[in-house]
Image 1 (cartoon, rainbow over the protein chains, first blue to last red):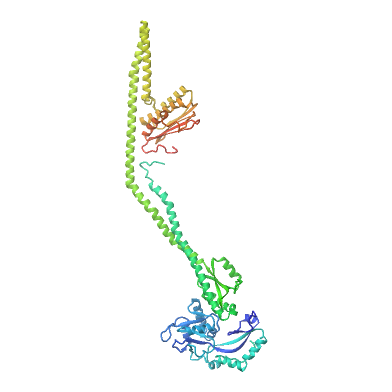
Image 2 (cartoon, chains in turn yellow, cyan):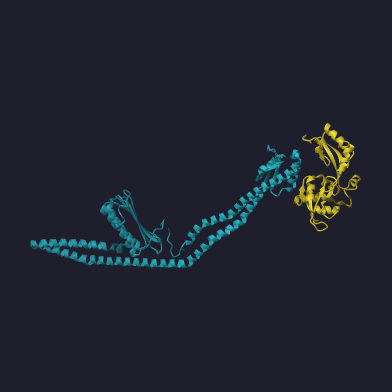
Length: 206
Length: 419
């Protein structure tokens, strides 16, 4: 966006001061749950904060049926990880150790994470593309007893969320403004809900 | 080369050590250095392979991400590159970067990075980065060679110790074995040989001495008995002649006196040949002095002499040989050299006696005039029978030098330099 290659970028974290200094402007449009997802081979259905720390810390290596845990990580600075860190600050340290030791496989985007979760038995990872669509052989774990449903996200019951935003340089251009209008129209909001996100009301540019 | 004596060891150990020393050093160097050097070379090759493999790995990782959004691959690559740089680089990888087709790095190097890389010993390897089957750039990986260098250097320590042990054994075992042999069987055999040689030399010396004594006795007998009788006969014949007889008798007396004179001359010559009785009378020094005086007088040449005998008397055989060498040499000078000046040197040290006669005469070509000429062979034989040596050096126009060295002590080298 800064280089002018594209008009609209997508971001799921707050802009840094540098980025704002470069003239970037973020417009939040949806809130997404960060789903703690597991491959369907995993029998467990819920996870606690402590479990998350021991799994990513490498001390818990088996699921409740004794099968092996395969932890999948996103790269450092990923927004899903940040969402968990906001809820569970120790998670940052645990991840950092895992990165340094090269303990787990690292995926660099949501789609790759989804593919890895689908194809890896015993896998656990943070799924950041809204609620899990029907038909995928993965399922979400309850976090502290809460499910990552649209309702629970909307009412702030589910603890792991991140806000999705558009980024433009300066104000949106004419085409971008038209697109934004569509996103915040009823049709756009409906599409967002359909994809498993919670649409956010149009606010001033942040 | 110095011949060993009774007290000297054979010195074989030193000779062996002198030859084994360089070999041991070579062995030390080869063993100490070859393994670390081989390790270093193999290590460098492994590092290069590791760097190439890392470059391919990073290229595949970034390529997979880039594949999702080919238009934005440069931007997506930075995220992957940053994570790889922070966490995934194995120990020893100094730098990893992606360059576009024109060679510009995606993440430009800072000044410090550039300087550090320029200073660091690294191996660079690259792998192409493909997006949609098209090469869009290359991944470059720099691997540090410091670890391999340090490890190779550290390997020098154990291998140096091993090399020192091997070289030490290679040097020490044979030397020790020889030392043992030298101190026992070899030394015993050598001592036995020396003892026998000494006995032989003493025997020879005694034989020569006895021969000389016998000859001198015969000479003295000839001189004293026959010579005096002939002299008395001559005097009587002269008296007969003076008392006036018949002319025929006078003639007979005259002829007989001439015969007696011839006989007296023969006796004198025989006495002279049989032995230098002068040695018994005045000793070697004076005898040589007199021989020099006689030569100077007879040939009208200058004879310098340098006679220095520390011993009161040498063995009779040695004295006789020295005297005869001087005598023969001076005779040769008189006969062949046409010299104006002769230098005679007779010096005895504690262990050997040197006789040297040098003339400034016409000299000769040693190859043409053999050493057998002028009694040289006889001289040489006498000297060698006493364990000594005789050398003749000459060149046309450069005079002649005859040098004889005879050991006084059993086992002393006849030709030890610097004596």
